[in-house]
Length: 100
Image 1 (tube, rainbow, N blue to C red):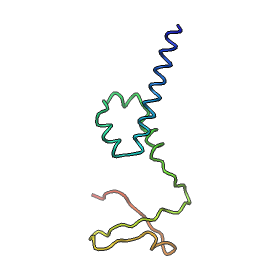
Image 2: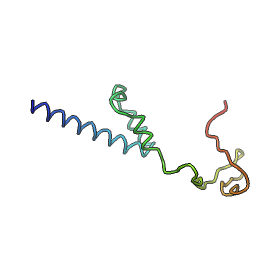
Image 3: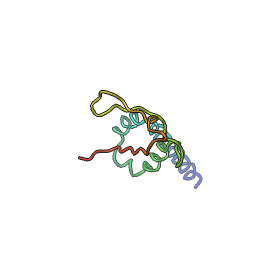
Image 4: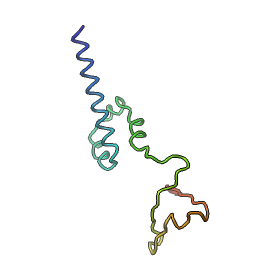
């Protein structure tokens, strides 16, 4: 019986180590893609990837915090627009996606 306990403990430590490694890699999305390319599909059922991803990519912004400043190029690539230029003037809505 003691032998099974040691085996279960070793298996738990291995599971936690692999989960921690996936979490560390998820903080770097480009590296995550390179790693996940080599992970077999059945492994996806063994680890809580969705929860780990949400934890890794949560960020620190909360409701009510000001949006971080950034500059974006216009559609014609001739100039750029700064979020700070709109501060205090009117609401700004950012849409990330495609309408096609």
